[in-house]
Amino acid sequence: MPDRRVRTRPRVVKRAISEYNAKGTIDRTSYKATISINILTASNP
Image (cartoon, rainbow, N blue to C red):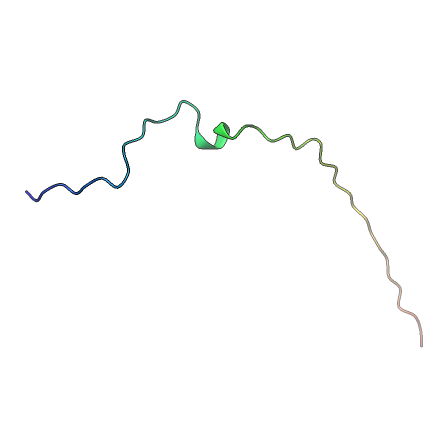
């Protein structure tokens, strides 16, 4: 068998928390969505 390649990165033990939850939760309730409707009427020449 050929020689083993050298590892570029050491082995990592998996975290108990996933990468996505490790960043913490984002509070999306503080953002207020605003909706505005503008009706444009064409002027008659």
